[in-house]
Image (cartoon, rainbow, N blue to C red):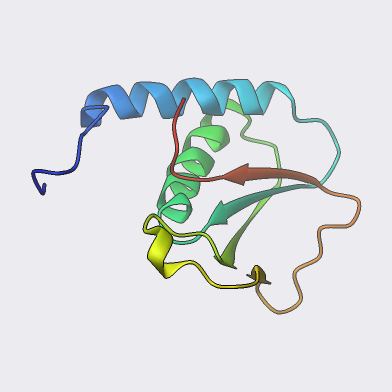
Length: 107
């Protein structure tokens, strides 16, 4: 890990945090179709982890996993685009669905 980065959670701690988040999210599920939307780049792997744990806590839930690319969002302000652009997968439909947005910022 580069010296200018700070690791907030160990792998074990991260698993605990993700499991807790999954348990809380699973408790909110009902018959409403659900989409777990990972923000590309680093939110997508976190969404994958969260989905795996949500399936443990709510095995019957049907949860679709999609990624969303946002052009304007960047860790480096010099890389910001002048106008925000969203790129979703072709055919993505969020109307009438519960959407859980996952990004790489953990509380």
